[in-house]
Image 1 (tube, protein in one colour):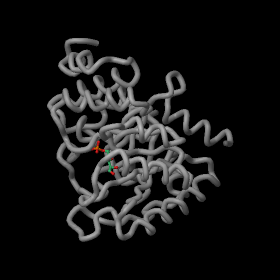
Image 2 (tube, protein in one colour):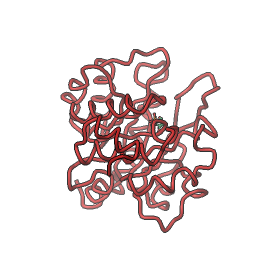
Image 3 (tube, rainbow, N blue to C red):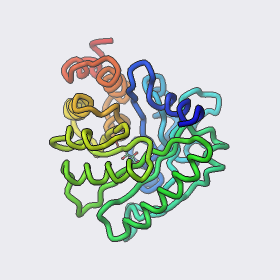
Image 4 (cartoon, rainbow, N blue to C red):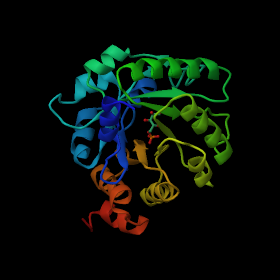
Length: 260
Ligand code: R5P
């Protein structure tokens, strides 16, 4: 691995403990003005001090984020379908590698949809992007998206995660499922979990804790933070789980503002 790749990876995964809190606010690329992100800058700016990485689209980056801020960026580079279209997640490349470099991305995120009719398109799109990104030392995060008709279990997540790693992804983002250790054991690259739909805060914190203790190196969490009744409290609580080994109970106290 070359120096640039290692350096960029260290911006995403903190070398002090090998973990990361990725704040995901890229939802607009297929969901439009997602609840909580209508005025993305107002929501995101207060959360940045507690996140290690910001994952978003190039349009959100250009329009809402101050270029002098020092948070490392993971740029969403796949897309092409919407939540109301017929082929949700049949994605292809929507940002060139040159633009990712111009925007000083520390990494890029590309979705694949294993098991769907069009899995081949998404997988070849990702591998082509990995070839381009490796030319410039930019890590690729494979987002193992799950179609509505697919079963979210350890077998499926292991399949999708291992495939993504074998095909060259540097980090895999997947969903937390029962027996998550099995997903981790068979994936040779670092794994982060997506938060998924909004849940009660205590449940989301328990999920983050269980994922970390099963071997995930962090979270790439969006709605469970920015749709929370207390987004700043929630990102602080998630940070406490990821970086300070807080228990779900301790983290819930952080969320409520009772504990630093
Ligand atoms: C989905 O593919 C998007 O990339 C989201 O960023 C991702 O799902 C994480 O956000 P959430 O925690 O809201 O699921």
